[in-house]
Image (cartoon, rainbow, N blue to C red):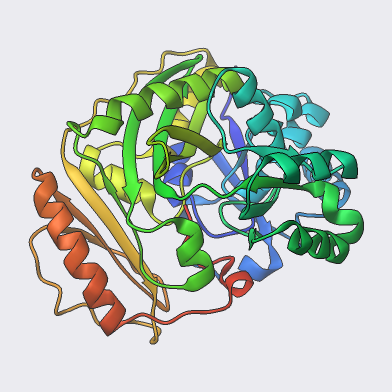
Length: 404
């Protein structure tokens, strides 16, 4: 291609500054579109050539009209989402404008929780027993075959948003009555107690070129719905589940068919049978400062790698996969009672990064010693609970960033 390329980022939440920075370093002209509610966020304006506001990304046709209008006077070469909620919208825009990148059909595998479960199960990957919510005879058969409790999950929301735990079929029927015509946008899944893992990856031309395996201190849904400290850490590479998790992650990505980009996948090791079950995967960078954890501990930031891959594909140039260092790390973050919580009492040398976000307290810990990270993680979770922690209603916490 000739001339300076232009990338348009879409995001309904302030994130992805390093992807924007990487685009500028690669020589792109950067456009950003966000929602009115995000106008006052601390975007890296010095890296953004043009900044656009739209009322609501959920109004797809309005966004399509706006972006195509902008394209009349600007050559747009790349469209990229920074948040989960714009992944499908961007895929629709790409197909409409005939721009490169993952299209609607392929991206749906990584947005629709029902689709990804069906495809994973067809590939021989274990998933909790689930059913679509469509035909009531199917639902009755499911209740007869699968023991409660159940998880009623939105098919398209991000992370733990909108999930309800229900304890018998009668509660399910009442919940479906409340949902009305929206009920087909949900699925029902057996609740599987266990330890929740997440695997964050970089994929180039169908090959997983970087993987890091982490374990949540508490399941994200418990933090999202019940409050507390969100924490996760890189698992010791000698941990018996790490190799199995990395292999399972590759199998999921292959089954769902993502050729290029980044993924954040979640799995659970069931208490009952000790087996690993696939929960969900997203074609985006993990939230809750997981990218900062990976950067400080392994030297690899998924935001930067994603932009480098998109650039290589657009310009037909080589992409060099990252080399990671074998350090360990953890990230902890909680909603705080004050706008700027005082972390001056936290002085350990392993603090690699202090999270600067209003009404949040958080740190990234890094060490060559996995045991040291684990010790500090447990200590800091208790101290954060005492020193900073507060909570808000789950839906009010939608934009807090406390989910992976």
